[in-house]
Length: 185
Ligand SMILES: [Mg+2]
Image (cartoon, rainbow, N blue to C red; front, side, top):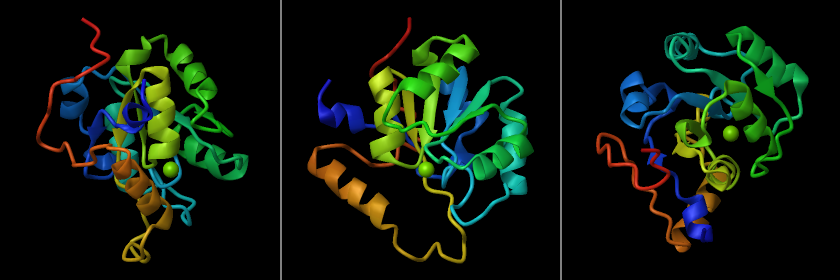
């Protein structure tokens, strides 16, 4: 698979993870979720999950197993967030390495193609998920409203490089395009 394809999310949500509704998961036949933590679930400077996120997790988990897989090495931070949501987690994933994603998927006992890797970063989350053959979802970073107006140099750099490589980053929201690869049946 070319570099461009490996960086191309299957779905660009155009919203934070809170926009990943049951309807969207059903549409793409997603049976399990591997979630990035920092700035996908919780802003970097925040230690606690929002009430909105808690409600989202509680609704989605009724039908869909969720694992947290973070590159962060802090047991203190990631462990606390995971425990507060009562979700299993893996630290120090070194995404785009596939190893810990594979470990989470194995624990879910689901086919790789039916598990979505959801994250805010192209070069870690999306790349790792695509390398493994997962369905990949790029979400808007969950940012502290107080600093939301500031620019995000890493995201902007990744977007710039990706577009140079030919990755399409138009939001797929409301389009519900057919899965163009990794279809199971
Ligand atoms: Mg992140």
